[in-house]
Amino acid sequence: MSTMDIDARGELGSARMRWALADCWTVVRRGLTHLIRQPSNIAWQLGFPIVSVLLFGYVFGSAMSVPGGGDYREFLMPGMFGMAMAFGFMNTAYLVVLDSSKGITDRFRSMPMAESAVVTGRGLGDLIGATLDLLVLALTALVVGWRSDGSLQATAAAFGLLLLLRFSLIWVGVLLGLAVPNEEAAGNLFAVAFPFAMISSAFVAPSLMPGWLGTIAAWNPVSSTVTATRELFGNPVASGGGWIEQHAVLMAVVWPLLITAIFLPLAVRRYQRLSR
Amino acid sequence: MDDSRPAVITEGLQKHYGEIHALDGFDLAVPRGIVYGLLGPNGAGKTTAVRVLTTLLRPDGGRAEVAGLDVARQPRLVRRRIGLAGQHAALDEILTGRQNLEMFGRLFHLGGKRAKLRAADVLDQFGLTDAADKGVKEYSGGMRRRLDLAASMILAPEVMFLDEPTTGLDPRGRNEVWAAVRSLVAGGTTVLLTTQYLDEADQLAARIAVMDGGRVIAEDTPTALKDNVGGDQIEVVVRAAADLPGATKVVARVAVTEPTAEEDGQRVYAPVSDRIAALTEVVRGLQEEEIAVEDVSLRRPTLDDVFLRLTGHHTEDKGADAA
Image (cartoon, rainbow over all chains, first blue to last red):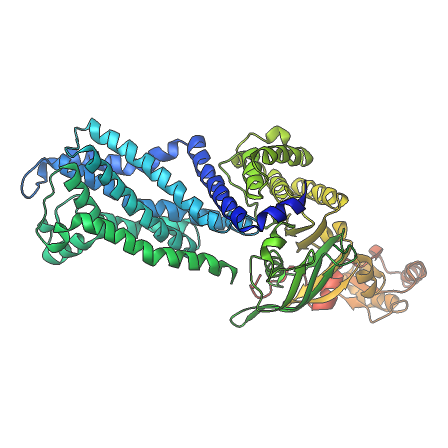
């Protein structure tokens, strides 16, 4: 094996770009191999939303009402999709902290691979995982009688908005994963994730909550995505009529971009500070 | 590259964390083609030194060169010439051994086909071919460390950094790792090995630097370091503690310095210059004084003695937690 030819290739600008993509793909492949070797993980990850569908749809469902009328289960399913995306950052954080505590992050950093690939590979891999999550959840939803009444384009746009939310939360997950000391601490992030997903329009219309809580819920980025997908799917929306709820589709784009603009640089900076 | 140039050079290396000086004027020169031991207690700065040399940490001052390249200015080039195996095996537990090595091979930019071939090579070299397609989760501690070494050997690095590679391993795992390290050096790699275990440095290293408080306090071959502590020691263990003062007087006749007697104990020892003459003299003296003994022995100084002499504390003592 020649070290020389690797040097020559590695230092050219265009070659560097090519290697950055190749390295990113290698890291993504690693995540995909995990899925193949441990398919049960998807089941665990989706267990909570599926159990929630059954609990809220059937156990509490009869006691739930949708302001403005409409079937509660039709109202609930976009909320479930949104909740699964909102919880996703915990998964990202857990995998990031696992790699640091096992020394894998250090091994990557001591290797001549593209530094960006650690982060881009993580992000792309998580998006692929989230797409699978959504697929399984959508199938579950179809089984319990949920339908999208929107056009094909509107339905695709709704799933696109859900993935956009998940994309923006990847950087929150990376930042938290680098900030917490170990896997146990990452598990405790549930205490943050739970209210973040629940104090939203996912299960109950904010207009039914006490005034101040309803305002917080309405301005939660999860709510904008959930309300926007309800509109696009043609499901009951139960809008309270505030500005934020009337501009749900716009805000379902703005919130994730804002979150990405704040947390992507923070996550990159935190990663670079590992060498301090 | 100039083959006579040391594989690793550091000059006045500094790394501070607030008040803690993890590296404080760290100077080192590691010749090519040997195992070089970096020895010191917890908190001496060994791990910090390795992290700076492997480009994981930026130094606050001083200069470090690995394989002729400056670690602060040319980190990417340094990374192509080094291997690192840290205190825990940095492996993906869910993947198989082979999948781990192929992934790292791709990240070393070998391309898919060469990564596969190279993975098979190093698996064979480290005796892991039979376990190659099992998940790493099922590996023993020794197997994990060997796989970890194999992963850092994919590019056949010029300089290999092993940070406490046997900490937490059972004797069998330790022997497996030692054999792997010896085969590395036989293949021409320079190995910088940090360890808390004196016998490990004694077994493997051709030269040793002793670290304390973030700097090197002694550097030599293991034999020379031991010679500097003074020659052999004679040790007498008496049967009855009451005889200890008598035995101490006998030992004092041949000792180079004042003998050390254990308080309320049965043991007295002292350094001697002429080992055989001293042994004969002490045995005869003890017979004349009619002192009953459990044991009379000569022992060569260990690296632990070296350490105690140089730092004033044993290797097990914990220093500041800066490592």
